[in-house]
Length: 162
Image (cartoon, rainbow, N blue to C red):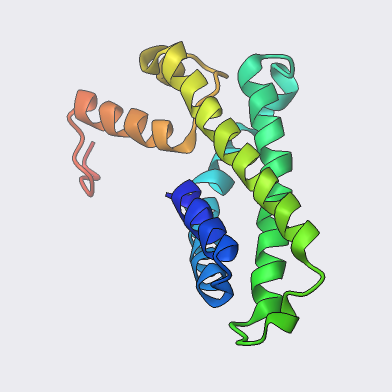
């Protein structure tokens, strides 16, 4: 979805519809903040140990590239959108074209490496990713694992009788 918004926003800039461009990218930045808070941030915290234990694995290398490129794009995009503040004036964007282009390129890199990172989990196989201690488990997969554990144990949420 973010890639679609970026492409659409880029098209708006090419056709010199700068206000629409800014609005679309403000939405993209907002969605990126939400996805970071709900998915990427918890995943980073939960899986940080794997960077130490398996630093040369393809999944970790891809994830590090994703985090560096995405981190720059995240901060730069947020600063660019907040400095614009939905101004009608083109002057508020003057002199920022190079920074916008770098941000867009790194955001696309982060999108592609994010897809690749998730793909490494899928191709490794969900059962092994869920059941192997110390494996590259993402936050969402851990929720699935917890759900499967609850089903297998017959425990009902809220039932504290054991």
